[in-house]
Image (cartoon, rainbow, N blue to C red; front, side, top):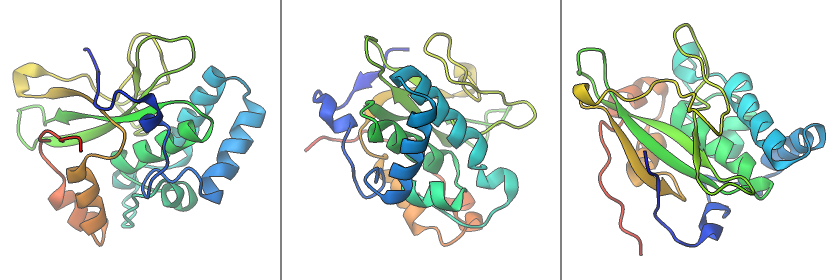
Length: 205
């Protein structure tokens, strides 16, 4: 699929914000440690992906009731759903000057019911002309993801016949519907009931 930059200024995909808070000491410490052990943009991006995928369990897999949405909280508390883990991965990438965007899919059950939005990250490494989507959700039986600039290794490719969708926009910030759901939920149980089923367009200022 063809991904579409919502902001033509690449610096938007390097910026810090309340959610993608890569200036926070927790994010900076992990970024420093990973970059020291894995010098070079590609090696670092892969190591940061592995860290978020493997060292930050998906809260719906573990039943952890805490809801996180700031990158620093995701990395410090080591818990979060796909949206939160994507925010954390984007923050680690931006902390080392690698442009990172948030992007999304609409997925369903095998019968097309219970649609829900799934969060991903797109990375633009030096020397590359195209963004590459990554899925730091976390593996479990039936799901095997990995960092890849070639063939995508996501948790699940979309099935258009079931109404599933790859959303092409590349967001510099979490989609407002995603962030609102995360911020409003006092615990995982409430979040599961309020996850967005689809995304509308976001207008730039």
